[in-house]
Length: 332
Image: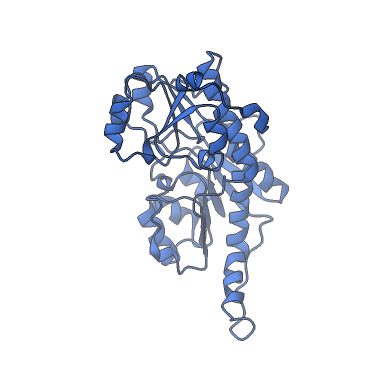
């Protein structure tokens, strides 16, 4: 976004354009200047007051909140903001927001739709390649001075020809499928609905998908139905040569069982950008060369942050000028 489009409005106008930030989303932290020149930012995270007291102080004036998955917007938070009309989320998913309460209150919710989809898809394939070809493990092998004195570095496995099952064929899952197909993989999937227009094999559930796959890539949203969907049965169905890549949400996997299966060799490896209790990562994973870890940042690039900023500021400006929002989460 061109900086000249972000000149500061008159003070009296800015005061009427209050935006509450509970905790700064990464996009906001990187591009805070642009937000601050357009809106009066209320920083709950910077206040010496407890969050509850801060919200109470602005309860009657705050109509819009900028949020992210880093701070859950619970029913209690919403009750403290009786004038709230809009939640502008910097994420794609909305599992951090109490959507039933928003529906009850008539609070609209916007997100950044598919701004991050290409970058997540690229990185998902990258994690799969890394695990299969043992790239990070090879890096540690060299940096640790074990080459060429130590035993030969273990062989990796090729990507082409692998049967890769995608869990959730939405924006991200579809882009992952296109990339994998171009690299010679046999793609199949499970999703809430079968995509009849696509050539990939559909499985009605994740257990059957795992049984017919060499690797699973998790791209689904986190809901009550998908929480711990990847359980011990699914892992054992995938088998001792199987790999799991998770770019969805950590709680989609039963993490305790997952760690056990990795340690005991019930599955061959994993590439993980998300974890069930972030930022806490099971320490058992640190010593495993067949596991590649990333700190929930694979969606984050300079380009995607710039595009996300445009969407967030666009939604805020639309709200304050009574225009249609650029993005709106369906009120279902």
